[in-house]
Image (spheres, each protein chain N blue to C red):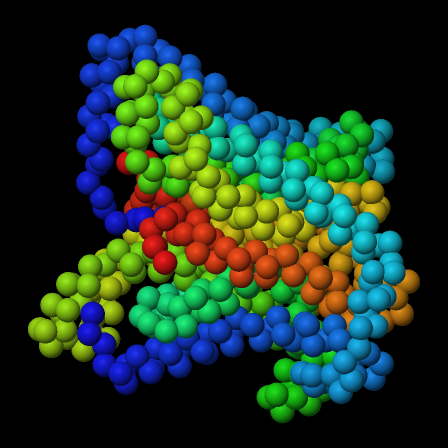
Length: 276
Length: 315
């Protein structure tokens, strides 16, 4: 497409504006996390003195480090379970003919739009009676309610793009459907599986509703819920800047994943429709 | 999420019936394998959501307070009458709807602009796409804190920037809602823009060139060529964002905690069940919220003819 230099300059200006839009609030919370003393209430974007004090504070508190361990552990377990189950299901749905395959996708889609709080409140009651309240398992199970449908539908879209003939060729050469799946499709599908894992991880890492309704102590409370409890009830006299520091720490994994896998994430969100 | 009408793919659909007749063994094997592979995920999905939903339906028919299990009493639809005749519920319904409409409308406009820039800018492509994924991936609670502190008259820079002095954004309903909407729009516009970008990328350049040759202005090209060809992508993006916006909880919890009349329906369900341990009443709120979400989804699919088949990976 021919685009004049002047129009292209306009698009570049737009791009710079958008980048500023995306990063300024993040830079603000980073800047706040380095403030100390009077700087915290100086109503300015930047601190006058940059200090690591808030990071020392959050890492010195069990409240945060335990929550961080809970978040990382539960997010990894929920992601792994979801991606394994979803890979099998998405393969079946996009490659095999069997009655009810539309039902699998329909259910996945219906669940992704369901209000999480409507699932969390009944679980609050149930978990208390069967002893899953305030445990890792008690959060990992409900996490599946959104990580699994998300993974199923991202993977189903990816698997649709895989060259079907390769599998046929393998079956012609004598492989069973299972062998064709394991030896041919799995290697082709790995990038999609990887993308689904990243998106699923983001979703679980982001959880707040389950974290706040189904925990009551440090035993299983994930970081987003713990951040909310820093306020008031904690040992910090003025938790604003420490909250900012903790917020920055939990944002680092997100930024790293985005920097490393930008193309994969964009492709995953647009279901492979955008190449680039 | 390709949404452009693609011709049905030949081999997969055309071969199926023939295979069923000639290769019964293989078809049976395929059918069994299908459920063997999809079954665990399907059962897990249904179990982790189906049970809580049915349980909520059941509990919603009791006057049941967790701290007083002995006083548990069947009241039928009593809780629903209590909620639906309470003015507060309708106010919260109004707040939730207002936030949904305002944020989704703003996200559509902003998201479209973002998608256009991402589609057209030849330089900074990687930087652009990486940058917009940050709001998408960031934890909602973190985004809520960032904006709450930015607007705060104790810690923030927003008042200084706009010369608003000591203005207390969280002191009034409208200004508090503005801050919540800003945080939500910032966080979710990138997702909207990526869905729209997928639709935009499907429009053949020839269409736009032809319109240009015919003397269409930039605005006419957007209105007559781009938007009509993106209708499917726009509807799907709107559906997803509307349903997501309607269950807003995290930002409200962190930024206002429901103060100043900013409580939303999800927040009400949370407060009734968890804070007040009125399990029966809270479950009824959850059920109503779920029904509302279903109504919105059905409206999109039936009234606006949103085509979700492409979305679900079906051909």
